[in-house]
Length: 189
Image (tube, rainbow, N blue to C red; front, side):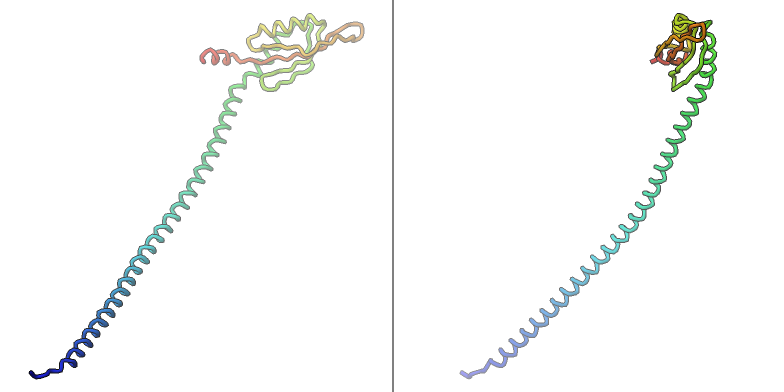
């Protein structure tokens, strides 16, 4: 049998396989780099899109915060105006009360009693005066208690003093100015 040398053919086949393997590895590396670059590009695009959304949301939130601050300022202004309106309404309602107070004091003042001072704090009224006797102060207290516009009389002090040849009683009385509408409102509740 003849002898055939197959070594160069095997050697050429091996080199061809190695070259094909190198090309395949090179192609795979290039393909992997291309996939990584495309993935990075896609993620970068998504991140920039989300950043622009976040910036828009931040700008809108800032606009809404300014609107909320303006609304809160308007609410505070509204509350102040409502408080002023309530005060004005109370003043309008209490306008005739001072007239009733003076009118009622004149009507209930017994003969022989003279007022020297008067001070009102809220609905509480302090009356200072001079009476011919302490019984006249008692009569004043009874008449105040029977009044529709005055009530709850309290005596702080009654001092008898000598003024020349006559004796007089100096007094301080506290009373409460009542409103006829208060009793009706309490009955409704």
